Structures are given as structure tokens and as C-alpha cells.
Image: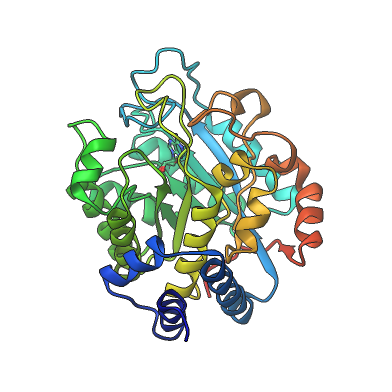
Length: 348
Ligand code: 5AD
């Protein structure tokens, strides 16, 4: 007789929905067979939608200055050991120039919540990139802002916005964030972004402090119902200068299993094999792709700043993580049967 966990994974592949209890069940009762079955189904549905293409995004970390104090994050305001920087418009545009010649057609500007990047400053940069490179998609990952601000950025030409929800459980959210931040506002931002017309990405850390199986089940249910265009998940990795320094890291094993599960929930979703996954284990990103992910986001930031954008310790910033080493990345993907493609890579 077939195990219930396998039956549920097969049901998810057919129906793209499970109850909260069923999501909990497939997490708690996963074994080698379940992981393999989820992987196999995820890879086959991924292949049906995207063939063997892996999409690439050039990531530009434009500022590590942040007014927030998220307990897990290495660039939190309270970390006085962090060497702060912010890129100028000219530096950002030269990252795009370099990225464009390398073949990148999506630029992701990510940064802390740095008040310098107000609507005027950020809209001006977005417009400059879109004017110079109208064939490129611009993705922003600049945190929580007002609806009006998101509207202006969209009108300026930004195509996509990434804002991880971090956890779909309000109580868990409050254990990861200072009192000045709220789960309600996070959700408000995500629904506004989607409503305005951004291709919107949410996501969460796997193995974050105090995370329970029930929390992860809620994350999956939220992803199922919110229907994001993109979803970024990666293992939590402790940073020594945060209060969570001594918490254990999340695992590659659970992260990859959840990548497979998310692929089965939304066959067409854009799912990156994240830097955190590549940082925690050699070959982690390849394992992500082989579990159902279809996007990688190499770093295009100026070399001198990369080390400073340290969200967690031992973050990869050279080798295959660097956009300049795109050839190595292509080789790595080819070795596992995938092909890096250079167009904008919108969701199907
Ligand atoms: N480990 C893993 N991921 C982290 N992030 C922030 N800090 C850490 C950490 N210590 C993730 C958050 C954030 C994204 C930019 O990086 O989920 O949304």
C-alpha cells in the first residue's frame, strides 16, 4: 500500500492545493521516498513549463544602510560593526552596463530600507535604466513602502518587486522582527504590489528561529492563495553580530524539499535557487535547480561592496556567485542538464 505522504504529494501535483493539516503532514512525515517523489514530479512539471531553461538575474545590492532592525539580518540597524555603503546612480548604471554586455536582461536592485532612496531618487534610477535598456526588466527589492510609493515606482517603469513575507504567521513574525514592524503592514505591501500590477515575489527563510512545522504549512498555504509570480526561499544562516548568532542554520534538505513542493503548488512560478542555498553548501544551487527551481541571481554589485552586504555569515560573493563568472555558472548548469538563457525571463 502506498504511504499517505506519497499519496498527498501526488494529490498536490494533480490538484495544486492541500489543507493546512496536509501540508503539515507532508513536512513532518517526509522521508527519502517522499523527497524523491516530490523532486521527480517537480522536475517533470518544471520541464513541461520551462524546458531545461534556467533564467538569470543580475543582482545589484545598492545599499546596506537600513532603518530596520530585523533580528536575523546582518545589516540590521543595530549592527554597528557593519561597514555601510550606498551606490550612486552612476555606479548602478555602470553595473547595468557590465551586466548587459554579459547578457543579463533583468536587473534586480536590492537594498536595505535606506531613506536616501526616496521616490524621486529611486524613480529617477529606474527610468534611467529603462530608457537605456528598454529590453530589460527591472526588479526592485527595497522593502516596505507606501502604496503611493509603489505606484510611482511602477509608473517609472519597474516591472517586478520582491518582498519576502518572511513568515505567514503573525506571532512568528513578531519573534523575528522589532515591535516597529508588523505582519499586517508586510501583507498590505504584498497585496498592494500585486494589485498595482507588479510581478510580485514573496518568500521566507527555512529554519528561521522559532519556526515550527505549522508555520511552514501556513507559508505554503499563503503562497498557494496569494499566487505570487516569484518566490524566494533559502535557509536561515546565522550572522554573528545579531541576537540569533547561536541559532542553528536551516538545512539544504528541507529547503530543496520545499522548492519541490512550491513547484507543485504553482507549476509556472519563478523559483530561484538562492544565494543562501549556494552559500550553505557547495553545489547547493545545483541541488535547488534539480529540486524544481528555475532561476539564479548572480551578483553584479561592485566587487568592493559585496563583502559588506553580509545578510548572514559566509555569504557567497565571488566564483559562480559573481556575474563575471557567468561562464562558470553556465558550465555548472550544463553539467546538470540545464541551459542558462539570457532573455528577460518573465513567468509563463
Ligand atoms: N539568513 C538567511 N537569509 C536572510 N535574510 C536576511 N537575513 C538572513 C539570514 N540571516 C533574507 C531575508 C530577506 C532577504 C533579503 O534575505 O529573508 O528578505
